[in-house]
Every structure is written in structure tokens, then in C-alpha cells.
Image (cartoon, rainbow, N blue to C red; front, side, top):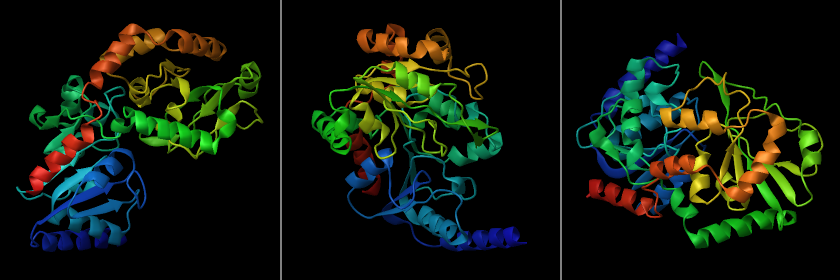
Length: 362
């Protein structure tokens, strides 16, 4: 009964909101954080001049939050998001409105959207994305993948670069990031830092616990005095990975992954698009994938072949491979593939995207 009442109220109010004029403002919508924008969204939000409004609220949304989001969605000339806007599959915008999808990850590594398992039906998935006027991607090479994954025309794909990568390519901002890391953790200075950043696991769209199959006590003992393993969990992973007392293995929650990359010699990940950030930072990646055969999501073709050939599945081999990678760098074929997918990330992505938004407003 409550759900039916909520639906009736939302539909009635939506009809009312459609009678209001479209305002010359930018509506920033994100479900990736509460109260403040992060990463790509923050970069663009801070740079846009003129009238703008922010809705930053992780799911689920209350009735009042949902109504506020619908009002701003239906009355703003430009809508900018970095994830899904569920309300787009429930309302139709007016012709003068523009929807810019920043997305939140570079490249096309893991399958997503229509190409991945989802609790949405294919029809719901398409309806979520079919009103985009601009899909911002990190390079021309991934344009076709994003068009297919969102079920949109290739004509709306814009290889303008990923906003948050501008900072990775700015020497001044990188130096600031390094200083911030060492200000918080002065004992890390002079150490060789390996950053372990695994992504989350899910079953039928629900996040599940992750067992990295690592003996952290043994790994801690194997690390040299001048080596540190810093663990950065994906934001949706709530359970700590390390339960034993360790000296050289640290789970870090007070710094972003990009900040940690600024002081890292090697990124250890599994299926995370953080490999693109690492590449732009000049940090080689090692893929530790003990569950490769069971991982729910599949990859886009080129990555499937390269990861299968170069990933580490045996925990005993991980540290030797990481040390070797720190000395010799990453496989050339993998480096070339990553480079092709971030070709538009040149340090000027924000200015290009903001110029497009300002053009829509004027």
C-alpha cells in the first residue's frame, strides 16, 4: 500500500513539475556520495560557472529526496551525472534539455551496462540511458563499447577525456598529493610502496564478501624493511581484509586511491579500472586474480586475452612478480592497450567538458 501511494504521489508531482519552465542551470546528480561531489563530478562541478544545483545522495532515496531530484531533473537545462539516474527511465525530458554522462571510470575493462549482469531488464537498462545527449569517454578507442553498453547512438559519444585525470597529469598537483600522503603518514617516506586495490565482488548484482586468498602474516614477514603493502578497498567493501597484526601491511582509509598512486611503485589489482589511473601516473600494474575462473563479470575481448596471460593466480608468486614489475615495468602489449583507451586524457578534459556545458547554457 505504501509503495502504491509513493508511486501515485511521484507520478502526480512529476506531471506538475513538467508544467514548470526549464531553468538555465546545471543539475549535478550523483549516487556515489552523500552531500558532496567526488572525483569526476567534483572536477566539473567546481569549474562550471553560473547557476548550478547538486543532488548527492546514495541509494535508497526517501520520498522527499526522490521528489527533489525529479524537480531538478525536469526543470534544469543541463543534467550531469557520473552513474545511473534511475528517474530517467521514469520520466521524459523536454527537447531543450541536455544530459551529460561523465561515468566514473576510464577505459573499458570490465563489461558494464547492457554487456554485464544486471538486476534491470534490458528494456529498463536502455531506458536509463537513452536520453543522454553526451557520453564522455576517455579515448576514441572505447567509444563503440560505451555506445553498445548504454544502448545509445555513437553520435552522442564524446572522447573528451576523464575530468579527474587532469590532476594526475599536472606536476604541481601530483607534488601536492605526494606531500599530503607523507604529511599523514611520515613513516612511509623512503619506502617502496606497493598499492593493493582489489575491486568488489558481487553475485546477481548484490555485493558479496571477498577472500583474497592471501596469508597476510606470511606476506608481511616476506616484505623487506623498506617495502610497504598499502591496501585500498573499493568503497563498497565494508569488511577489512587484514585481521592479523602486521608491520608492513596497512589498510588505508584516509587517502584516495589516486593520492596513494602518487607514492606507489606498483599497483596490484584484479579487475579494477584503476589500472588506467595508474598508467597515467606512470605506475605499472600487476593483476592478482585467484578467482579469475569464477569471477562473475567478463571482460572486453582484448583484456580477456591479456589478463589471462599475465595475471598472478598463486599467492606465493605475487611478491616476486611485483618486485620484478617494479624494476622492468608492465607488458608492452598491455601498456599499448591501456594507452589507446585513455588517449583523450591529456590534462585538459575539464576545460573541454565545461566549455560544452557553457555552450548548452548560452
